[in-house]
Length: 339
Length: 192
Image 1 (cartoon, chains in turn green, blue):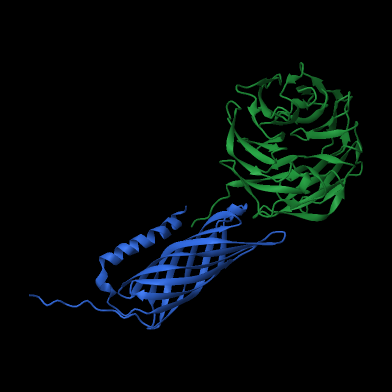
Image 2: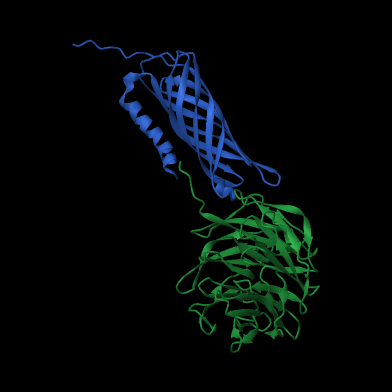
């Protein structure tokens, strides 16, 4: 009997209908998901978005119905979560979370109060403290947000009817304060999600009502946005977008039940659908994420209430469906895989 | 399956082979009952429950063997392993074959029964299910009544929380022997 090195990492999925988070152990080699004992773990009401601290000690969940953030501690041996009370107040209807790569600040989009809450994070306890200038006003209906890998710029999708926008902010290093560098940029109708490429030169926004993907160039100095060509066609109702570490782009199409996969020209940022794309993903693919090692794509099924796993061809970006899937018991909204 | 588990699986057939090839060694005093008690270590496959690694659980085991013949008996065992947040118990019964060579006794067994797994993560939860074990060990006498179980190694398969766990159980301890099995020594046939 020899000592074994852990060959797994963890993944957590928000389940608004269960007021909880499902936990899974992910096999590093096969991508197979094993349910963590005790899952789902309790959170506040209707958790919408999740982020795991880079220390892998803390999980943060945006509870959209009660307007606060849950902090949950991770048991390193079992993967189980236990909530630390009290919850931290946020704005009205917090729906999206993002954290800087150093785990110093948490940014929260509050859909109904039309602002962004920013918190500093205590690295030893995980506790959140709202910074003095927070919340920061934003354009109406912020539904999603993302940071560039360097943490210099924050982008917010504002799903305003007839005037859909992406609002750009610069983030003050070490302070977390937000400054808007210029006018927001108009995108397609029904903007739902956004992602930045690893070189942080391009921003991609899914336009769920137009069945397109907007491609925007990021000014490396100011963070301001500029359009690149016309929006790219996707499947029906693109709802989630994620970027592979090597640059492949994946979009989940909720209505057409498939995943559009693109290779991206690293100099122009223009995506081109790869061979055999789109790849079938039945069950209402509402959220997708690439595993931290870039080997697997996980698809959260809204109607199937499952997580499906695809292996990623590292050369072509092609997807191969795995036979296994994990059952959730209620509809998922977001997923985070640890390193 | 680990190398140790494979070794545990190999013990019974090797023992049977030795038994069949050395029957004269049976002609010695054999106890009717052997009561065992001692330390037990369980390597439990807790990765099936989503743990990062398998769990090492320390605990104890008691058992009673009823020898029907010098080389065949029935054994019942109860064992428990404790850790945090996990406790595992098993109660098993089944046939045992023994091979007695000089002072040492080598045995192999296949046991069937139940296991109970108790996990306490954000609240206690318990599950019971079937269990199967096979393996063997070596005993060595220290007095006329007492022997030491040098090692007992078993592959233990449990089915709890609707999941299958492949485990390894190692034990050591003391054996108290009483009663004896009547043994008919082979008659020597005079040379013609």
